[in-house]
Length: 453
Image (cartoon, rainbow, N blue to C red; front, side, top):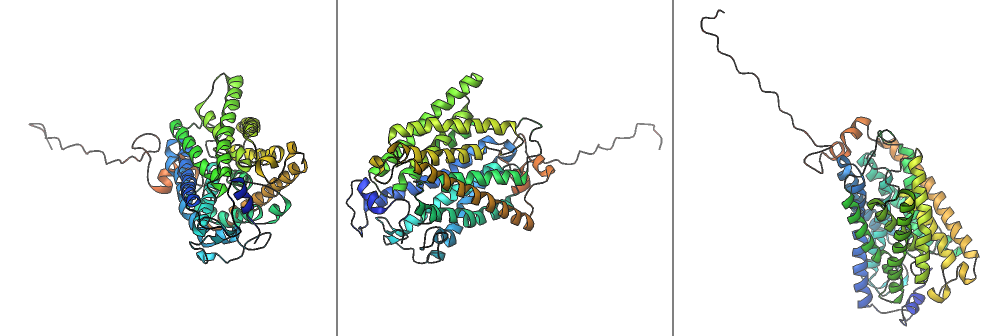
């Protein structure tokens, strides 16, 4: 079986552990991976708050439920079929069915990557949390207008048809891994993939009925900040957990996951100050996410000083992509393409610039004397973009042929919370359900004394 992500013996050497060819179960590694799995799972509810705060109050429940529903629909699809398609077999393009319906996935520390120091079942679930958050990310481009049943069918199919193959190519010993394309924790598999799918979905569904006609403002900016905070917390499991062990590699990834977003936040704030004279809360929250996305593919491949550089440089393409989108007719509602797609591309290419074998024990990038790595990384980006775009388009057309994709203008006007779920987030305000009783009938008036019939 080809190794996945990082060769395990190198993970061990990076962490100061002398792992044998068939390592024993490690209580420390298992404890850390239990924690990391919980942290990554937390990212999806955190995303729900981040996205929910950015939409109008009449759509907040629908928006948040798109993320929460991924926990179930994508989680089940991953366990039954997605895991085996993504991370099994010797093939270069798709896995076999050895782990279908969780067959051969047990508590032993042998599985898809030969031998690991944690239970195979735990590793499978950890990988599943990545599939869940990736599908949930796509929802940000089509909130406030996509019918909920269509969304559920789409993300379930998308996790199997789009996410699983790309995960196989990069992390499952597929052809991109054979070419030497590196992605430590999901720059290509998660963020470029989701960002491109979001762009295509926004184009296929078209804009909201009010887009370009009235200001569509966030209804709860504190929700956005809360979501950003918990996303950053969960990202420690996302990046540091991708070391699969409690070792020095995890420590490096965690440090870089703090430093890169910090640098992005500073540069983004300066860009806002120079352009408008103010730093916005939504801009600050967005900067944190962009920095996290940029460092994800390189989290354990670059020195901390270059994590700062990646975070600073990564602010520019996403910031200006946001400005371009605002002036265009594209209704990528919550700027998933700019924050995840563009930042993911920047991070993947910058990994080829700043990676150093002296840090990661694996490969050099441009500054280490290997300029060809930049082109390898760019080729992997291109493959992910083309495949995700094409298959997302076909899936949306398929789902649209089976059930309606987009809500009617009247349903959008009433709000997706009421029309899709029969609920409302708040008891008053925009989108509230008003219960009207019949107007009271006037009581019979007594006839005046001496009156006539």
